[in-house]
Length: 237
Image 1 (tube, rainbow, N blue to C red):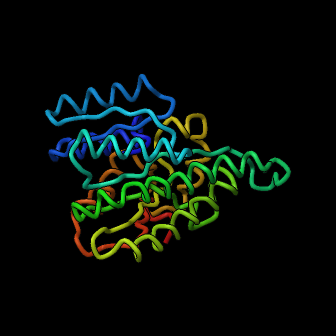
Image 2 (image 1 turned 180 degrees about the vertical axis):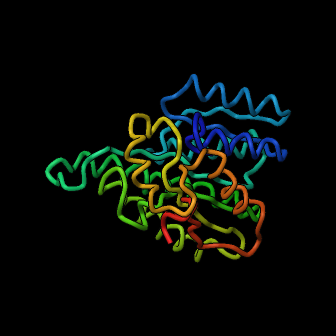
């Protein structure tokens, strides 16, 4: 489970652990928080593996997946949650440097692909599945920055493309959240409230709201693949 030190990743790790799954907790920078997640998972009584890796590096991803296979015995579900962004006003096109574009796409798109590619052989052995945490930004074009929106749009397409080649053994789906109450949005509460004025359910998601959808796609259905499930309180419909 990539990016599982905090927020949605932590919520998913705990939910899978409570269902009896062994959990691999991945982080790239937030070691203290990742150790807290691992301890909480371990407290449920299931095996836990803590692994530092950036998904932007294909070799690190391959090493992480190999360790999961060797130490946990296989892989049933890959949850792609790690992502990054830069908060840039959409009208400020000059601020969108190559460095901004490259960092966002390297993590959000290529990193997600690296994880899927590395995990597929193990997932095929267990007829497992992949769930990626995308964003409604990839559908609406509204979000933290234009490159972020574009990267998530690409992730949504990647989900559909991989579902075609991974089937029938492996299902591939994504969840597209709206605003989530995590540290990413600290200090942007006014923007969130304005965004949610047009939502049927006028609140931002909690990490557990998104974990609900991830768990459903991973464990609550056997025929759903190639889908991007929107979880934003009806803001996008």
